[in-house]
Image (cartoon, rainbow, N blue to C red; front, side, top):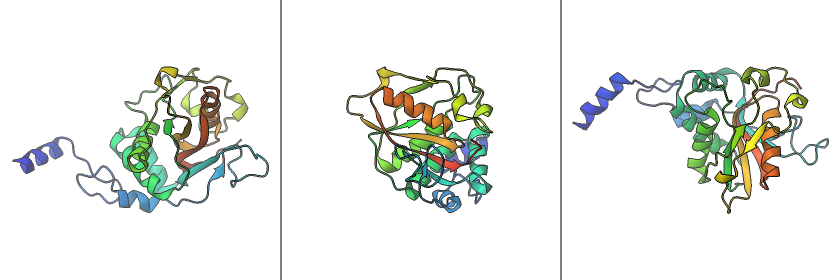
Length: 220
């Protein structure tokens, strides 16, 4: 009976690994790991190698792959294909490929105020990281200004991100959380992550670093 029910739901809501096509899988961990090519962290200020001689106080940014090829396709499928469960698998694969000091909590970049998406893709990746690392996800940030998402994906200058672009929800902070890692789906210029880090630091939290599934290295 359980097998018949499973077949019934698969017919109604079919899923398959976007890489190998395996039925019933939103994304095989092994397949996703196979598209990742992690290297050392980069400086969040300039996106060059970390530690950075120019920005000695900057924190490291960790990423799974360059924003191209299959890794980029997975990001697009997650963001525009409404496959939230894929994001969790992507986060789990990312955790297996990265090595960084464990924070007390993972803080995802929030969705933009006017986003049409049904879920926050950065939060899904953070949830996958959380499952593998045993670190809780803390949704304590929200956008305090209206900025079109596309404005942050091209040649958006860091100086153009308004001060106080993010708002910290202190009601969601926990007393035992002192260090955090910021999570995003793609890092392009670092502007969004730096804005979030500034808000978190003003709230008394130490940002150990940030992590994203891909790194696009947009113009600065």
